[in-house]
Image (cartoon, rainbow, N blue to C red; front, side, top):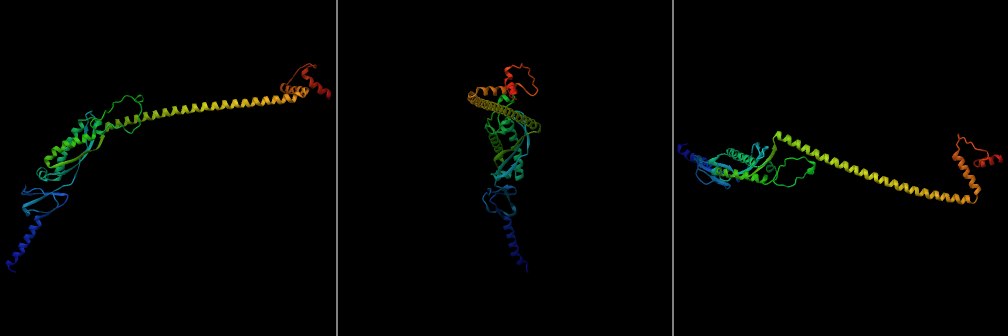
Length: 315
């Protein structure tokens, strides 16, 4: 094959190489900045589709267009009332000016380092400018816990009233950091405090205080329960005595009526034969006054022995 025959093949190969190296695809989650020898040569491409650049002379720098995560390092920060806390934050951000981002950061990893340098100081400044209660609560809503009266609890230093709150503090952090991140082409969408915790020494004292408070509440409930138990037992004894008294009264009334009825019957029976009544009553007196071992000394003409004497004569 002659040398002239290779020319078309070489041209085709060159054209294919230029086409392959000049065309690129922009994804819907991407945005592209075209640079030539490090200089931006056109406006960023933010719409998805097929792009074109001048082969090896230009470079397509791709950056994410969707939201990105930032997770800060946990740090020890003192509050305005000198309480040391472990504070852990996170944020969501995105690149809104890829040209500025390319010129100031260049890479996503570098952009995250800039976030570290700006957000962490903003968090520290916000926490140290407010007392503890502002960091951990967002309102003065009554907590869903058991409450005991002030008379039962020793004087303790209150945490105070929420005037700003956690939500506004995080918004201040976002605004302070967002203003500085504009120069990097970054929009800081949101900043949140993921976790707040006491340092070990403070946490132990807080736990001890919580335990003491729970014990006071438990002791209050126990004392109230004991008082209620004594009241119930007192009511029970009172009711029992009332029932016994009414039962005794009723029994006495029944016995009285029975005795009266018996006396009436006896009177009716004995009135028909007074001598027999006298005999029966005398026998009852014998039975009541003399037992098996009783000794009685009486004269022979005693009226008490009248029926004994009569019975001996009858024999």
